[in-house]
Image (tube, rainbow, N blue to C red; front, side):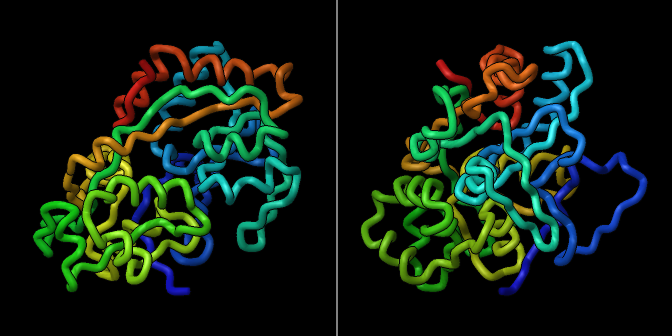
Length: 284
């Protein structure tokens, strides 16, 4: 499998003096913190990864103490083994912890109801946009242009990231024949679409991708990327493709000293405002 990557900023670990960073070999972006020395373990839908550093800083103020949190930002099917008490391997590194908190889409949460208690919706996204390379070299103006023969579409994997794939298809459903082209000719992510898809566009393997708005917002945010790499196009179908995000305690974590507080914190005005600054929409 060919590997393409971007210069992602490190959101945890950057303060540690000693690094062993080799792109394409041993940089792990979606496992954050110290897995051997944490007060709280969270597994969560990967596309929220940009929010967590700000959220954790505010959470410490909310509880009035310094907290060591280890969190995983992956597609939900990828972190499901941890929920089930199984190991999860990342190269030669094996994780065996069981989280206290799970955050994911409603469909996934319903499938793990034997492991979690009472999922609650706490935030929504702003729908779907079309992400293209900076300058929009193929002059893509809307979903209709994705049907052009010379335009290559990248999209999340329909087998391993079914929730995002179905959301993206639904956003594009008004264009006759487009779903057929995507299913037959699109470039699919392999493991983690929120890392792979933009890298495929930047490398010229694909020209455009339907992605959640907050990804496009993140890619253009000078706080994370000094030189924006991508542009995005909004379209009516994308604005209607709104997704909900839920949080739940693992069964048995009800008496954990921090996990229930995290769930409560996500519903506070402060947490909702933090999500808004990253391109999400608070619950009504």
